[in-house]
Length: 392
Image (cartoon, rainbow, N blue to C red; front, side):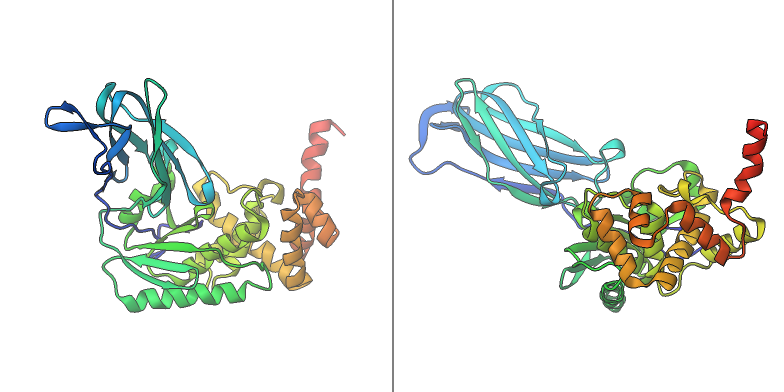
């Protein structure tokens, strides 16, 4: 995720496409009908899906509808769904009144605790059962959950697809080139192949805010989310055609591919690499870092495994993470960084991984880095407070 102060203009965004109602007809074969009818509708001899449909109610959710008919009373219709590569598999039951011909609905929430990013592909199928145990299942289908506020254009090269609205194609082409350049640049540091990815580009903060996960009022007021990566589903939401934001977010995907979806790389390393990939990192990062160095108020490395919760600390976190990663690369080389990610992939924790590759843990790294900045080791800064607390 790339964060900038509200003073910065330009960032990254997501997109979607129009998707209102998908209707799939599944009539029974000729000669399979019986004489029993419901009004003008002829009941089939076998349990059958008549039609299925989806209504997109972005950003709140999606309504899945299925019409089923059969010679016995229908008791259950389930909708099974999963995201890319089978992740986040789940199912839900459609609401309907049991009968020999029913129309059931299931509401899939996509906001708040149930958030799904627009642009995500959802694989789904239905299973219906009647009261005597007969069962019928539809073939799996894939639907893209779209931000249907806009009409999207698309551009593709290799594993990268870019979608945008109300903007020039030339801007999308330049962004696509920045993305491919980043993959080449970061190969020596991160390695691995870029898995298929979709980038959705929004034109303003109000546009992208609707598409992103809910944030606190303070964060939304004081920070701009330039881009956000959803690595497990190969999706990036961006604000504007910003090459550095694209480079930043693509690097998150490269890191995720290098270590595996199940591995949690410390945020200081992940974000530090992502900022390192940018051609011109945000000036706010450098200003915040220099101010913290001047006042000796740098964030402790042991508290940087996750991004800070306070908006006022976020910009410093990015600047400090970048400085730490640059220190490792410039002093120990690209091969060591790639080796570090490989050790993380093997399941090592932060201190263990650093010791195996560099010969120091987080405290050792922090003190070497602080020495390069002309600052005392953090252990010396903490010693007076410790003595006072223990009475020694």
